[in-house]
Structures are given as structure tokens and as C-alpha cells.
Length: 368
Image (cartoon, rainbow, N blue to C red; front, side, top):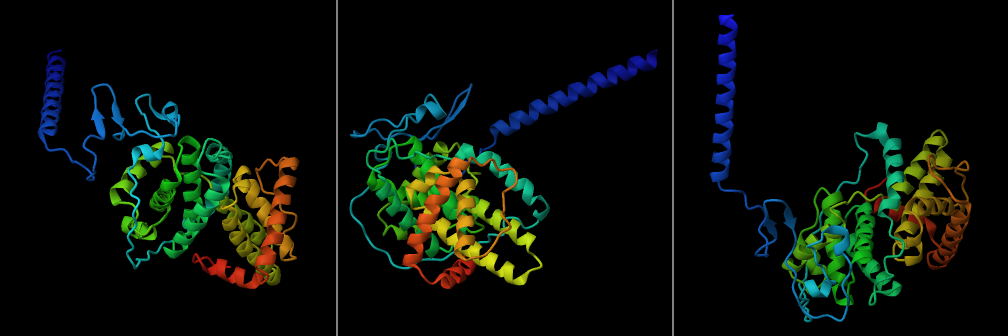
């Protein structure tokens, strides 16, 4: 009995010692200098309260003709973001700085995960509705479909010049549309929004994302580094820091790979299907500029572009039907008709399909 009492006393003493050690450790940590993190131009971004932590950028209060964006309801009751020109001070004068620094990247997203490609595809298929914003311009008084087209066309040229992977462009456009869906943006801020969304997408996808000064050079140094950093925080909050949006390009690559696996032993048919995939990559990149194609789900648009590319090259994909995908015939027929009309216009502008195949097979380091 005495032995048991002695053991209990040792246990109680050990617990007391552990408790004293924990208290001492906490006091030591509280007295240490905390890591200040990345230097930022804000004086107070993080307001630490006893009950909750708020990460809200300081809002610049200036008058504006545009109304509030309504963004406060979706994120935080205390968050009061207005349209972008209320938050950013955009200069009007431009200065030009020549020269660019090109960065490299890797786009082999499935390296090491080849056994899970189908599971990844099905997961993306289940998420696409969450990130799809078919009517992002409904509440934009200054951004029309034509203005959006010019923005995406310019952003595509910037993307090509920086030699980023293809999916980075699609993700950047998705981020732009999601921001336009929740915030009103003036035309003066569109270039800044474009390069900021491209920067955010690059940090998600690229091994070596571009530097901010590289992106500013594409705008002829119209904007400042601080404005990009400020808008980057706003973009991340507008997207709830959720950058895992499935892109239409990812679905096209899966559909093409699925069909190529079926005809793996037929060299001639495999070559034609690879040409169809290259044409599909080109067509999808061009459809990013057309607001009408944004109304269709990414998987549906990718399927119709794949079918149109196969038909354009007079080849055969075995009447491919994507696994796990629910297709409404009315929506499919409408989308396919729009794609075929787009392809007809494309053929008139670019009759040499072979050159397109070669360019879009090699442009992003992808093999035909």
C-alpha cells in the first residue's frame, strides 16, 4: 500500500513539474521578439484583438462616382472595400523603361502522380461550379465585353513574353473574372488588376514566378510596386485565398490524353490526335478573350473545343464521352455551335493549321 502511495506522489510531482515548465516556456516566448514578416507599406494591416484577428487593409477614403461593391457581405462585417479607384491612387503619367527579364517554369503538373490522374480529374469536375462566374460584368459600369477583350488580349501577350506555363494564364483570367464579380473596377485600374492577377496565378503555378518589376515594365511603369502589393492583398481577399480553380485547359489535356491512350498503338491516328490537341490549345486560349464563352462551364467548353478540333483535322476520337461528366444536350448543342462558328472564323484568319500545331505544341514546352 505504501508503495502505491509513493508512486502516486511521484506522479503528482511530475505533473506539477511539467506544468511549471509549460508556464516558463510561455513566458519565454512572450518576451522574445516576434517575427515581423514581410515588410509592407501599411502602418496597420493586422489589428490583433483578444477575441479575433482581422486582416484588413487600410482603406483610402476618397470620393468616387461608383457605388460600393457589396464585397463586405461575403468576407467580413468590418471589411469595407470600395471600387478599386477608391483604394488605389493611380497616377496619370507614364514613363518607359526598356528591357525585360524572362523567367522559366515547369508545367508537368502530374509528374509523380500519374496513377491518380483520373481521381484528380473527377475532383476538378466536382469543383468547377464553385469557381465559375458566368456573369462577372453584370455590375461593371465601366468594363464592357470589348474592354475585357482588350485586357485579356494584352495580358496574353504579357504572359507569352514572360514565358509562363499555359495554365497560369487561365488561372489569371479566372481570378480577374472573380474579382470583377465582387468589385467594381474602373478602366484606369484594369492593367494593374491584370498584372496583379497574373502575379497571384504565377505564385500558385510557377516554380519561378515573375518579379514585380518585370510586370510593371509591361505597363510602362504606370503603377508602383506598392500598388501591386496592395492590390495583391485585395485580390486574395476577394478570392478568399482560394486559388484551386479548375481551368478549361486542364480538362482539355485530360480529354486529349484519354483519347490518345485509346489509340496508343496506331501511330498515324495518334499523330492526328496530337495535332487536334495542339489546335485545341490554341482555340481555348483565344476563347479567353470572348466573354460569351465564359458563360459555359470549363469542362463543357473544353469538350466542345476538343470535338471541334478533331472534326477540323478530319480525324476520329472514338465518339469520346468524358467519364463522370453530366452533359445537358441543349447546353452541349449551344456550346458546340458557338465553337464551330468560332472555328470557321479562325480558319479564315489562319488557314495554315500545321503552323498552329507546331507553335502550340512547343510554346509551353509541351510535346505533341
